[in-house]
Length: 138
Image 1 (cartoon, rainbow, N blue to C red):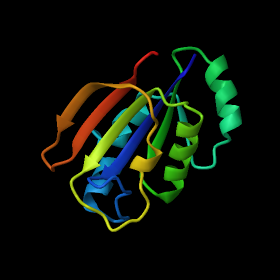
Image 2 (tube, helix red, strand yellow):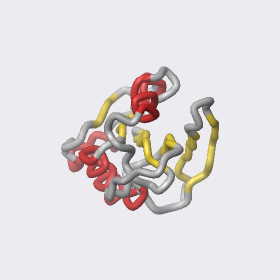
Image 3 (spheres, helix red, strand yellow):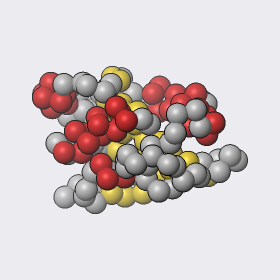
């Protein structure tokens, strides 16, 4: 079965970072941010991706297939909600941006429930903290 990784940028209060935030731009463009995880995947998911098709694709593809979803704005937050609702996420990568936003949209409200194991954590020079979690088998 294929694996699905959700790579998320969120503020300290669990919200979507504001558009134009320099640290969000770093996460989106730096080789240690989203591009690093994008290279490790085989299929990129986008907002509006048909989740029923994804369920079938995830079951029929081999273990070498890695689906990748980047969550950093309102539209992609809705994708995260759907992925969490159907319990499709196997790996969470959270870039915690050291700001408190003014956004009312909570990304943390859409994080999947369940047991997660912290695999790696790292703090970058700009203050962003990376938290990498894998789903624990039940």
